[in-house]
Image (tube, rainbow, N blue to C red; front, side, top):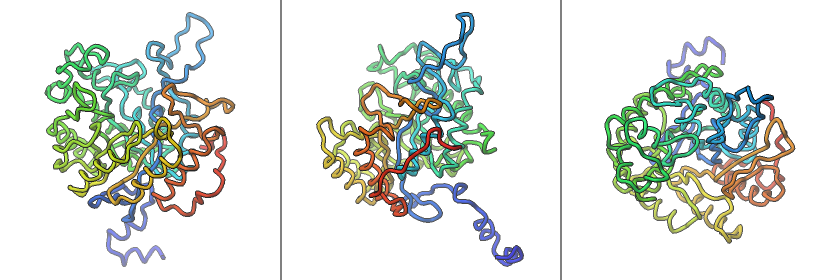
Length: 407
């Protein structure tokens, strides 16, 4: 096409012709996610530590008088290196994944290394450095991101208890998890306003690598209300529909092209009518076909997509590969499944490429670890079936990922 030919096209056609795939948003039509008007599946890994980690203690200062600003010992918090982040992106790409769900790209409150160390609204700009790099590297690797905005738990990276404590509720998960007062996170106007200010600070931040705000960058295709949200009883689905609607409206007012995920731990029937919710989700420990099918029946009633947000990649405690194959088959055959993300991916302790990082929950997947190869091949085959990316060649040997991975 000659430059002069653009003069003969409608304005919208000329604009479309110039847009790169990484600049196109993921959209939704009923129960189907679309990229460039073609069906798209969100398959990949949970990599919760991309913005802030709890598994690596950086080298301590050379003398006791020095203070490391990149390690907060009480919560074992540290920033991941650029090399670790880039390797994770390269691994997901090699596995045939299309997306990553990462808690700490959005949940970063309550400790000195957080985006919001305190509730006064002061932003710790240093905390944006690994987040900015992760979003930039995802964009370069063709990976999309799903980002929770808070957490149900009092974790090292923060969550709903930070907002409660900052606004006059002396609550901790350890002593108050079953306290009805935790519902103030959803029902107290001051707490909700504080949470919305945090969302604004996050979404309006400009990434220096892309010159885009997080609201505008389509690399982040979806924001999730939170991770495994519930009320005073574990798994009670007690997240008010009015709160989900309010947060959804607020996110879409800042970022109208983002998809919005209901982060309630399970599919709450009262949320099915919320217009702002694009995707419903649930988590699986252990995997359960019956639970999965029940969830799919619910979302089918409103013709919206379903995302299996977490599942233990080892399957059931005493599973065989056949158990995972059967569960994957349901995901692959349902027209209402938008995708899934296994729990959870770790890599080398880059710049040390000779040692892997381990997490203590028993679900650490390490690409390149020979003891994980059989399961990784199974996961990769599933990703290829879901995304229909036949060019990857799932039956072939796993492609190598160099360490350090090129940026």
